[in-house]
Image (tube, rainbow, N blue to C red):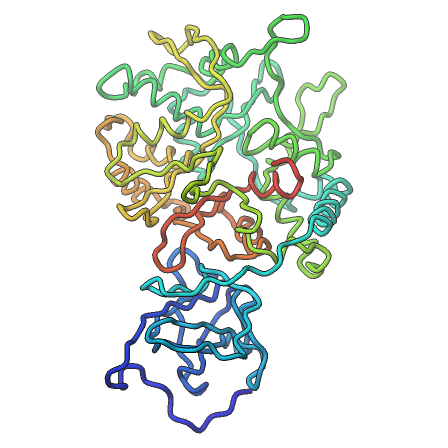
Length: 505
């Protein structure tokens, strides 16, 4: 496509001129990605490398002289340009452009940027000229996209989520908390439905948040967590106390206990998605009732937002033009929780911790963002009064260095790593650092090859890329980082995406 015959440009071989280290980023995936441009005379192809923790993002740093440059990406044998960067059309087709201000220079008249994005091309010394962003999506296109997604979800049923084969883990309420803790770890799952044999009913769900509350409270009442307490107290005892805490007033001023959040196979995907969002739960059991009184139902599946999102992506994958919002960058919609700009107010603060922070600090953050606190009552775990929040919203915490660059992420579900070799019996929550906790998680990754790494995206990533990433196994959220520096800019979760798609945010 491009002519050759001239020698490739060698920035290091030019005597004298100022050289500016410039970072180029291709955030749209591929197997092999190269960079070429006017600075290589369109002859040399510079290989780009996948970004750690973000395999769909390729980057390279190349020294450029001040002035005007054109460039393009060679992705899996095909020439591509980035529509979210300034671009022009000329002798070499459509190419991206960049102007680096160094010594006095003039921008060529052909330099007519159509769009820009800081995250896809960084200049280390901050001399990049910011351009006006491409026109934002219209209110009409946004409404059309949401309507089409709502229609799809309303006309498809939960039974479409059921796999051809698989297993569902359920725990008996008579199990000791310790045994349940170990089962979740061994099975590699963050939670499980609870079965009460006497009632013949699924009566609840045991989640990672339950273990955080238990370990935090037990740790607050002794130098070390007493293993005997976890051995002698059952799931039923814990849930009984928690249900009393969570009881609510009905219209007549009488207390009632909240009902189990579940789904039936004939419920629509939209009903289940809204149910999950409104009740702030991660999953719901899919239950088929086989009797009139609802006893001894069949547990068919565990439904989640990730399963529903996968259906959306599969349905619209080859007709993405029918959803205009899919091609726009997530920064345009500010989906999720973002670090506020200077002078900007932000209703939801993004919690971050340093590696030397304590595990107790992390656990406090994971349960502190709550709807409300109910008056504490005596809970049947012995000797303690618990002031337990009704629902927590912070589910993961970016771990950052002094420059706020991402190092790792600590999530609620990571608490199950403490089940390995009964690590919870040997720790003090206030003394164990996040760094040490992450080491325990790394050492615990195995019987099933489990392990969690940082899953990242860029502010310039189009919404459809983010949605596809969130459907991957084990990916519940993406940390939004600045390309190259990995400075944390925000975090986007499954619930954030659905609140936006359904217009509930």
